[in-house]
Length: 157
Image 1 (cartoon, rainbow, N blue to C red):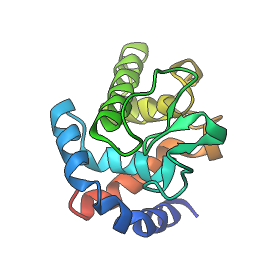
Image 2 (cartoon, one colour; image 1 turned 90 degrees about the horizontal axis):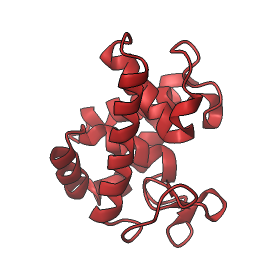
Image 3 (tube, rainbow, N blue to C red; image 1 turned 45 degrees about the vertical axis):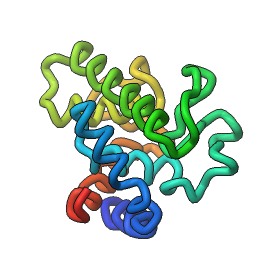
């Protein structure tokens, strides 16, 4: 399946994702994160809102487009709000910075993928680059998010 499957999922989410394009761009630009990466996470986590029940997913533990986990964070904003996207993107940035400190010898791309994997299952679970996705949802979280982000990059995010 791989990249083609990720691109197909992103393509299926594109219409809904376009509803959030301006706020995704604003948050991405404000926080220094490629908006396409934010869109990739939104596609993976909530299918651009399509997989949510009144804003909730993950058996009532994940909130909003980026599925912020209520067990680890105080939820802010409506499920599809700028506040929510700022919170989720801020969590991602913190995980990327944590992985950069934990693995200073990794390339920037490896650190980014480690941070994306940590967004899914915590930075303690990122042990080696070769096994960065082992234990993530589906066992392919960072690779899937990156492939979706590349699709959104090509589609003007």
